[in-house]
Image (tube, rainbow, N blue to C red; front, side):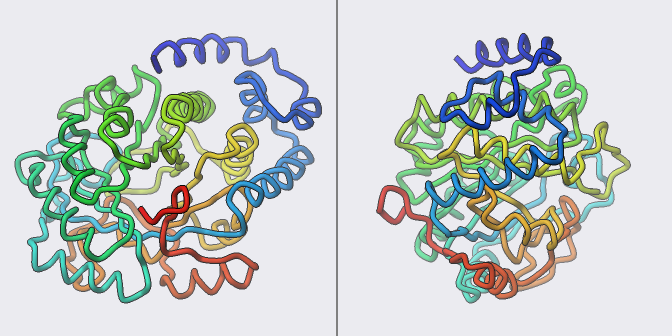
Length: 366
């Protein structure tokens, strides 16, 4: 069970001053959890450069010179949770609450599709009343006829609900634990369905057992000690890779961005720290997908093409709709990279990589 692995992670974190030698680690083919912890704790710039080059070689060996692109679409911003860091929180009384109807969803899909995008991420807030399961199912059914890959990032669902979605066109589930520290998690999620740490922790397993082909997990860097959160998240991903060897497992490293609230991050995660997390993860888990969002600046996103990441969001809006029509609903967080899909495609090609709009798993379109 993942809980036992996280308990073992706590033991290693308590002894984190006892690190393995970095030079020895970087010559290994197979790393231990302690090796990985040593890598993300290391702060030597020369080692970071070496890790970048190793990461690049591994990425090209396992994924080729390809960057998969997707676009997120927020269907609704209704939420009944009190998450203190989120712009969609129920505590945000100034937010204009909106839910797209079927006609509006189709228009948004058409606008996204017109830019060549073939992979869609559907998002909602955490609210089974205003966005019930049937609403999500309807969105997936519409999307499957227009996109080769349909992924959702919504509230945690039951296994049978994921099974129904999977038989109706769903290919993937994205869900962030936010932080793996139970005490910090409890403080940041005072009420609402998301308050249940363990129910959220086992979401990816429920989805994979139900037949979903791919899952993405992540933490929101800045909420808690990033070393603890990244270490535990990567061990969680490794656990899923071993338990579901035929599934596609990906990781995302979003950093906290202002979200229209008074929340201030507890830890500042620098660019160098983020690079170390990405390179170390690629070296430790050679076949895990790594997603980079538009929370990051264009300069950093461009620099990371080829160095560990395999997937990028493009042309993203963090408010409801926004592609076919501006609903002025307010953002879940502030975007740093506001470039169009076409601009990002040009950058990827200029770097000698191929932008891919269709996700392929095992040689089959999903």
